[in-house]
Structure formats: structure tokens, C-alpha cells
Image 1 (cartoon, one colour):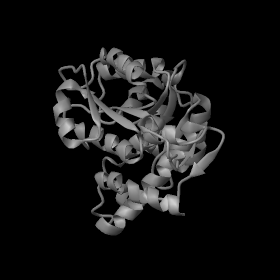
Image 2 (image 1 turned 135 degrees about the vertical axis):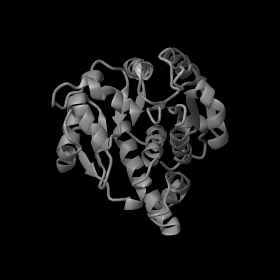
Image 3 (image 1 turned 90 degrees about the vertical axis):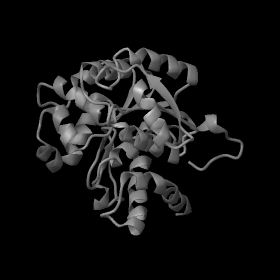
Length: 289
């Protein structure tokens, strides 16, 4: 992760964050800011077109924005995928976040499925983009039908409830078997699974890691959105296997940023936005260790 003196913004990737909807622009902003603070060379925030002006006022000015076709519900139209593919090719996108605050309806379901089936790069699948596939799992098996025959390199970041819905089992069962279930999902679906929560589990189906950073103050809305942006940002800054290492680095630094922030704002007063702003201090501590 330390930078070479002759590097430039293109050396560290261009992240595209596909997030937000009417009333949920905050999720897109948090994910985008997480990506920016984690060192991506460029970050573009793709949002439904009528939400662009709202998001642009709230996100850090270093981010670019991309307006995408919007339906009457204020979410992405299914036709937005075509514009995404054109943008990815033109701007040489290296990783994508898909899901924070996008809502669930027939348009967003079609949009998400089209993206992961045809986008040949790393995709961090989070929040509503994960819930899209909860309907596709009719049996209690680790294989997720919607993840078959896809081009994207998937990193999924569910909390126990979301993973339970994907597998048609209870969140309690996931909690009681965190490492085993996360590993099986990763192995059977050829992806990296980040099972969030106390002692977050990160696995590629072969190796299983348990995170040691973080605190109860991070049990608040938006923290996962920041994490998704961080993982996508770190993808082009780590060594192979990039997906696994980006997830590991993102989870550890995310928790560490939360720990450092809590010392100033307290666990009770900790907000997701604080985590994004404390990422540089967490990175400084990592590099100094």
C-alpha cells in the first residue's frame, strides 16, 4: 500500500459507486467518501439522475458524479445498466460498489443482475443489491442461484440478516455458525464473503480470517456503506489475491478508524461519517506499526 514516488492518480484505480435513491442519498455519499479517504485515484458516484444535485452537495468535492436513468420511485431504471457499461469502458473503471440505498423493485433487480452478469471487474455487492437475490434462494443451501454464470469478481458484505435471507435461514443460525457459513458461501459461489458484525469474518472459501478491530459504537446506520467504498478503493492498492486482500485491509482499517474516532467522539456519539474522516489516522497508524 505505500506509494511509489513516480505514481499518479491512474495508479490507484477508478472506483464507481452505484448507490442511492430518493431519500437514501446519504448511503451513496458515505460509500463514496469511504472510497475517497481510502486512497482511490479517482471516484465517481453514480446515482439516479434527479438525486445527482442532492448527492453532489453532500459528497466531498473530490468526487465526480454520474447521473443515471431514474424511474418514478426515485431508483435506478433497468436501462441505467447500459449507461454504466459505456462509462466503465470509457473511463477505465477498476472496481465498483453496488447496492447501498438503491431500494428494491423490479427495475433495481434487473439493474443489479445485469451489472454483475456482464461487468468484468471487481464488484462489492452490499445492502439492497444483496437483498435482490434473497428471493432467488428457494432452498437452504450455500449455493446462490443468482450468482451463477457471472463475469464480475464478487465481494459480498452482508450482515447476518442479509446472509440469512440469501440462504433462506435465520439470522440466529448465521450468528451461531459465522465462520462455517461464511466459508461455505464463499467456496460454493466463488467469491469473497465479508460477514459483518462483532469479529467480522472474511473468507475466500479456503482461508478464514476474524477481524480484531472495531467497537460497539459502530453499530449505527451507514457504517457498512463506508466499508463497501473502502474495499472497492483498496482493490487496486493491494497485492494478489486482490479481492481477498482488499476485503481484509478494508475491514481492519474500517474497525481501526472506528476505534480511533470513538476515543474522541465516544462510542455513543460515533457516526458513520466519523469513520470515513478518521480513515487517514487509521492508515497512519498501520504504516507506523
